[in-house]
Length: 148
Image 1 (cartoon, rainbow, N blue to C red):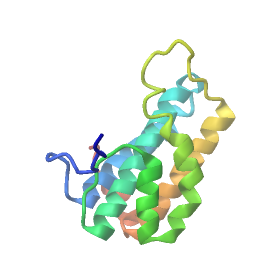
Image 2: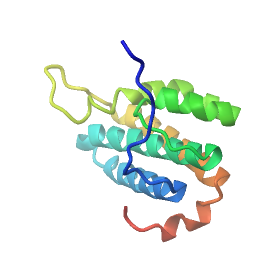
Image 3: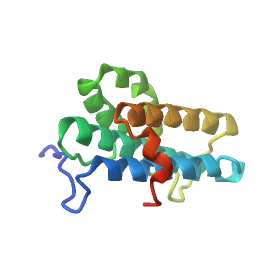
Image 4: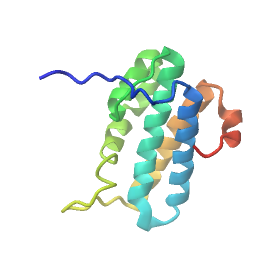
């Protein structure tokens, strides 16, 4: 069995600003969706997407290498090699991983996310996104980002 390499899709942007733009869209979507508790699964999915794109944007900006993959823990560990501060999100990244698939497809045992849990998820995602945006010095540009 061969190990999967985390090579980027050929069509993926090589501009970290594009990744941050897309992450910001997902964060704003999550913050809007969390106002309706019937949409907690979609809120969690957009949080997972925001974290994934922000981490990919950060790695691209600091390492110069685009990365592929959806595993937030792997991406967070990769970011931690650049900046140990990302270690604070390792546990949360593992928890967010399960929302990549389980929140989008019907299952025999539905994924149920409480309002309290979704509040923590959105808060953690906002914290990680803000850290990356500040570190990459794009915070002042966020309102200028157009929908991706």
